[in-house]
Image (tube, rainbow, N blue to C red; front, side, top):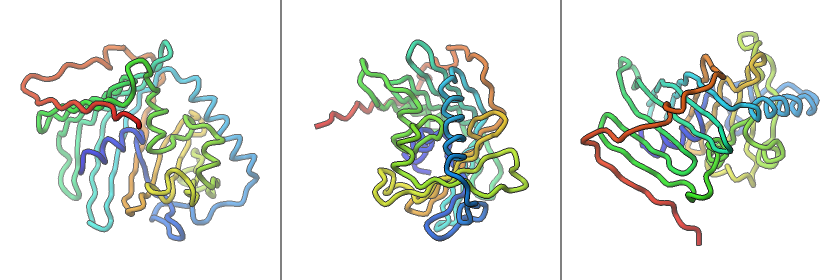
Length: 262
């Protein structure tokens, strides 16, 4: 898979499962047959989620990231752990992918680390022994990991409700028996949305008990499908050493500075 796609997935946090694309549905989506319901119910869900994530200072969760290309009949599955911590007005994000499964092949060890410190995104690829450092903010103007993620994909709960409504038509999908503990929100991209060139629709599943995202899903304008599951979340304090790293000996290094705005 192209490295740009993986980086985008990391910042989309963990992308994504099935969703409806225009007038068609992916096999596991209920978006095309949304239940008619008072908009206040959706508003309540979003407000409660926003309150929950606003109070979040530490977050650790196992992730499964699936990327499908139906046109090429290709699919990859990566598994790993995501760490997030906010302190002193700053935030840190780290995703450690540990395994890779390509199509029908056996799952194999495949180590890639992504670390974001508010300014730099560092990608360490242990397969090709290479490191890339992308500068994404000015040194004196660090950005929150989830704010940065929202530039590529709105993370419900971390994105302002009014901003979501500007970009999407939001509906609550009909309850599925196998997902009775989850809210399922369907977001259809509006014609003038800033995301119109990237996605056709996005799904979010929210754990009713925890009040946090359980799955995120999207279909791109190129008909690629991103799927991400959040498993076994922990809100315990994370040791700051988790976000520290050293460049392994013998690895090549590429530094990509911040693009200056004209």
